[in-house]
Image (cartoon, rainbow, N blue to C red):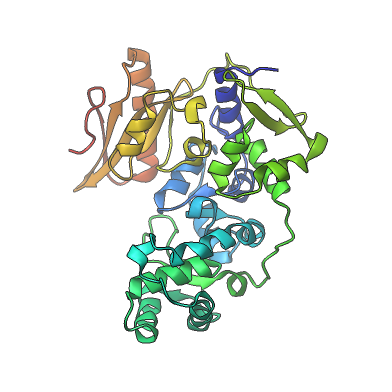
Length: 370
């Protein structure tokens, strides 16, 4: 069965809870989406606000404090907000590739080349121990142990080599503190679980991002052995083809969305996984818009109209006002402008309730910087 691009679009949005806000709890949403992108502090809050009705940001802060959610380096080597169970069972899949990176010539201009990886790792384990430690303190110990190397590169190497996570206060609502790191197992009081099958992880990916190709799964996870793991699922998956004849896999029995279902305007957080988790992003990023998404200024976020990337926005808090500047990627109708402006005001009321909201709709493809 062939699936149109619009079926793929609406199915992705439905599974991402971007067609209508839902009543899942914050941990339930993190579990369903296999984590929320949290490379910076605000994005998971925006991602949850875009998906959950009456979202309370305190649910994230409280969960970080009681350790029912954690911020950890996982898919694509980036920080994700995940449940403890996912931290313990996904990290063993991710770690082998992360650990190789620091000793390649391209890593920090070869700063670690020539050192014994096992010895470096042992030093890192001893330095971090069982208690949380600030990046500054870790860097200081790196300088003592490796005076002839760049201490920042040694610090980064340890953060790649060891399964670590960021502890509070960073990551709480409105708290952009410098990172404090802990090894995963002491923080969660449980061992890593290397027995979790890659096939199960990919089945969950399909439930949140599918139907998808093996190349999509690889782009999302940066893992190898994808095709073998999918084959192990047997009749738990079914296959489709897309408009280009590529094979797409999906959870057997999973519903496909109505391609004619309306899709409301949505303002996503920067790096939202709905946009980044496919090798072929055409189901959500129209041809011609992807280059602009890659080359735009940092911390720029996506605007979805009719389910597709249709513009970018960025918020500039200054003085007593919060300016949300919008740059359309195509001509918008008057109704679309009104819909995006209404969503923008709602987002500002959530993110910056104490500042005067200012929404600025710029010319098509305009520079977002003031």
